[in-house]
Length: 146
Image (cartoon, rainbow, N blue to C red; front, side):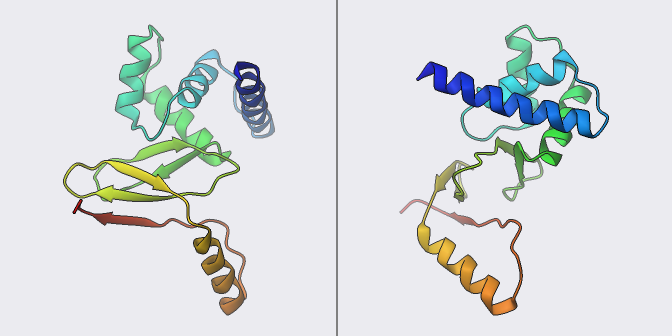
């Protein structure tokens, strides 16, 4: 199982390397350390939490480098940004294979992820109805526990 994860991360690293080369960006060790830390993270994160976690792991990285690298990762499609009704952004690594949606608890801010194949059916209906190509979408429910 560990070998599969390493192979998967190698593909992610290659995608980021290719993106940096194609767009004339430097391939710095800090950028790849940030990439590695993000892909070792489960679930959603914000930049401050990522910064603290990297400091705790003794990585020397500035907040500016984190913000700049996140922008590059967003541009190349390896990270997704969410604004779950708060004044700060949350991010998650992009899973190329699994589209999912979110439920946010109003009182705690806890984020639950879910997948429902009927949403794919709705996307198909919208595409046909408006004769458009959908590049991406975001579906987030907010509520309280019963």
